[in-house]
Length: 506
Figure 1 (cartoon, helix red, strand yellow):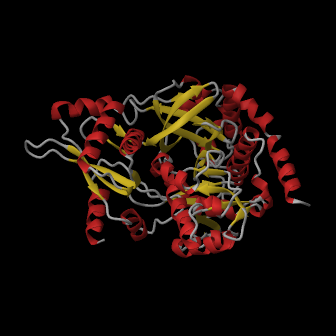
Figure 2 (cartoon, rainbow, N blue to C red):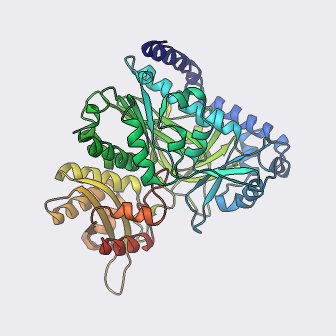
């Protein structure tokens, strides 16, 4: 069968899903309510189902009053039992897979349960529907005339007590349906290599002979790979190597700090960027429009959503609301109940609604990754938008950054201390600092109030990192590739102090 025919058949098959998606777009509350009752009914005979008498829960109000909101530390004992092979604790079907993700506040790794239902009805279903939306929006797409270049995690899968743990991406690759494996490069053996640097080299070697039409992965690590491809081939840009390249599906970190660098290596106005929002716990949202980075919340994929307004988060009067009570423009912590047995689980992400018909969101940061030492409540969205505006104004490009507080000492005011690795440095560092400070004040009125006349905060202190600092930090901590992220904002100085120390040695 010729490749154009394969492309046409695959596109036709995936586009058929659009009518099923329209159901949750038109009837979001009914779909979510029905899903909640399905989850409760399925798990009513589990240990947790009997503990909270799921069988007698008849409404969202019952659910809200009866089940506590939980963090990973709260559910860890149950998860550890499941990892040792016990069944029917929090989900009725056996949990074979556990996605190992970055550590919690007590520095241990998290092991997130991944059920067969969450693989099929959440991760893979949402992945197919992402392609469906893209193809529906782009009639001339030729995705299936070539292959998708994927860059997954750098961890192998490990077996223990009859269960398996590893990076989510490794679990997804290991269980991937035939059609997805067939249309992806590199092959599974290379994709699952544990040494990131060796894997990058192997991917370059294998993919240069392929017709790559799409790429998928975390922007920071994908950039490392793509720059390696360009260096190895001696070409100016990726379109000279893969002329049919048409879209980048990205997630994991904010794309904005990397946008200029991608536009340099993929110099085409027709090239598309589609953002996704997924994690070990599930696949939550996808970009559904060509020219807007808002993300459509996925409401019929085994996940029931609740939200905590951030102005009440972790306070005695913490408020929890369902989807039908959210407001546009407000910042919320995300709470999920999933088809892998997480019940009212604090995922640690924050989102802001940009639309409620349909429900669309922007990811604004992490509940733990903010700076609020002086009442300034600086979130990642503020920092990244201020950086983007400053870089646009002063023609700079950044690779990565971290921010921490300088604590008040004696009569000395506090401040924010940044370390930034530039791809293209500012010609006037002082002007960069002033410009960044101005944009932060425009974006965050609390920060502006604390900066007014240096009342609480002095001007930011900015260090320019030496080339390769953040890569060196990631390598030292065995966090190269995959879902690993550089900690951007912190109320403590640990990350910053270590980065400054490593910077001295480079």
